[in-house]
Image (cartoon, rainbow, N blue to C red):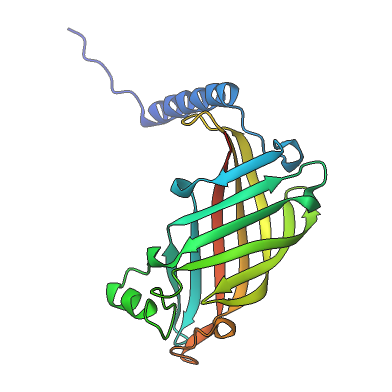
Length: 211
């Protein structure tokens, strides 16, 4: 009986890439993804909380950038593709969904001297003017409210993609956005100046078309 020679590893890897490429091609045909903001479907959308998050980072004692995350969001989007400047969106963040990986710190952040979640459990961003800066990018000026303190905030937003969600079957659109705020503007003064005042926000959201 002849002994089978082992298949070279590079052939196996090439075969795997071929299969994956074929799957991706089939997926793009069945569920075509649009990566051009001008081709997104206009209309009313609601935020998909299962695919949305807000991350923040702040300088910690000059040693590192400390990061945390909010996981529970809600909101809506009214998308006008003919006149994108007329689009508008609202995102609300459940402050109690914050986690930093340090439970004791999370509890301190919930206290009245910081987020005061008992009295003000929600933060809210409401878009105002929207100015396109490229085909898929825009500068969003809006108002962020934390602890009943409202301040103007700018976000650099990027269109990621749109199309029919293969799981839900609903038209879906996704964006990412970044911006920087001063936490002292919202009365979040604990640990200044040892922990930085400037906080970088990163928001990733998907909106599903209203049924």
